[in-house]
Length: 125
Image (cartoon, rainbow, N blue to C red; front, side, top):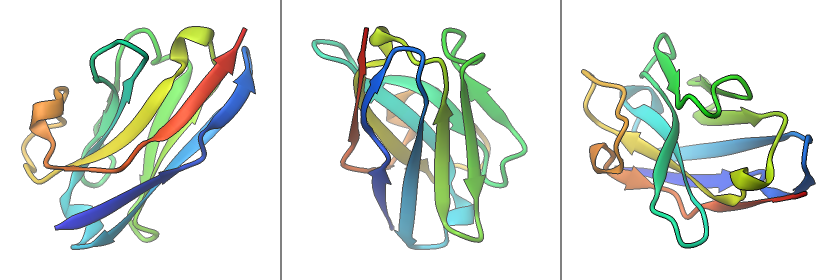
């Protein structure tokens, strides 16, 4: 089992940047593929980016891939999401999640077993 705690959210103006962190504790972090998800007001939770266990495979959805970067530091048990050129539509609660299946970089919430509590990102226009 792994515990996940997100941080780094906040209020930022459109065009600004934020870096989210997800600190993991418990079972060895490097065995998990990881993902960032978000849930905007009145919307379903959606994948933003995902990364394989050692970081060799990364994917982000089309509408953020030129602005967001996912990375991980297994030595520090931490997952990151660098978000640049933020837009009002990026406003959401952002969650990190862990997947025990080593054979995929999951794109669906149902692929992930463990979740953090979320961090709010608000982008003002």
